[in-house]
Image (cartoon, rainbow over all chains, first blue to last red; front, side):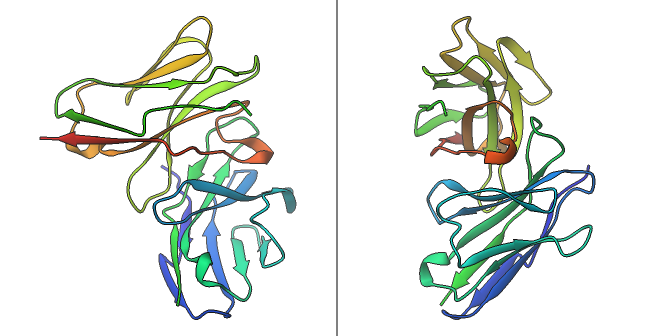
Length: 113
Length: 113
């Protein structure tokens, strides 16, 4: 079964550093997403990406965040100048069409120290 | 976006049938009802989607009454591995489309031996 893959599975970074989280969505999918889940809390939508541009973003997705699809397979989330409160699980997801189910990756656990 | 309400937690035993009910009084005509499952430290996984009456797949059944103001996810003969958080979502597509998915707190189902 096709799957969304994320790397790394765990990243530890110092406050103020930049991190890049990587995702390989399912190859024929059209919409790509990043979500985050702070420990013990809800899964929160960050951003959707379609046709090589941001489609929607939440209020969480401020200037500290950016997304990119640098080639035909990778989808990245960059967090500039990380803060302690950025510590969370970050999930990448993709869907094949506007109304189909989302496939989530296993997540990257980001720990900011 | 239709708000959903579901129990915060439920307990059951191996081999039992488990029913998790979700209320969504403000569901719109175009909305579908979708359920996702999340294991600890993993991304959510699509279980089932329905619009009305009953839907069954290899994992679960979804019962939706005629007024569509609630739905019940039914898991037959649960095992320990069904311990997870179950999310009920309502929207035009099961993957969220451009807006992404809005997760609530879900129902934490604990299965005991």
